[in-house]
Amino acid sequence: MKLTTRFAATTILISFLTLGALTATPIPAFSQQGATASVPVPKPVIEEWVYRIKYGYKDQWWAIFKKYQIAILERQKQLGYVKDFTVYSPSLHTSEDSRWDYRVIIVRASAEAPSGQSEGEVAKQLFPDQVSFKREENRRWELTTNHWDLPIHVVNLDASN
Image (cartoon, rainbow, N blue to C red; front, side, top):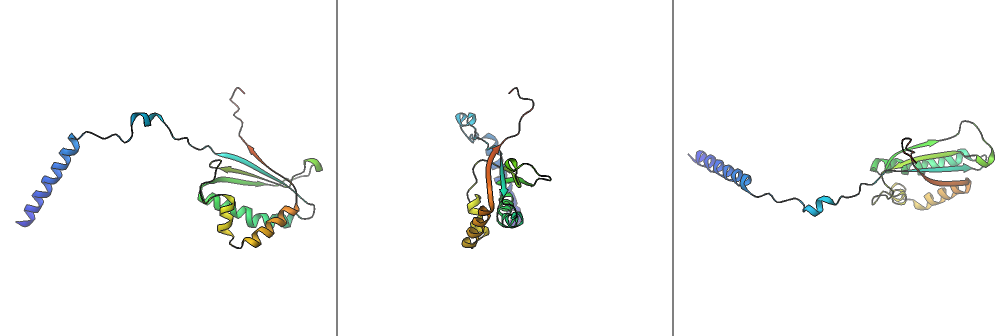
């Protein structure tokens, strides 16, 4: 008898809540003014890093770059800030004035890194021995004869300009 009474009370409560939900005036999730405002979606950013290395030190430079910079990019990729990156090295040689040894094309989710995902912040997370990190990175820069970072974009072939 007690179970039947409890079942009847539960059925009445569910019916009451359903009826109330059907007849209640809905509360808008946001005002009409808020509906026209939109949050800007960050656009991906493509960046190119180009390096020219002192002759005879390419292997040493690459070992340091791979140890630190590639590890940082991989971690940023895991976190979602870096969408993809590719490292290039030339197959043939060019004149000295246009020579480069490595190009890194990076596709970032946005121009600004989310909290905890910048290069410096990730470096501190991955390499707690910052003294060694800075010493080896300084050595890599000593071996770099020329370097530039260049924001680039894909050209829309269908655009009028």
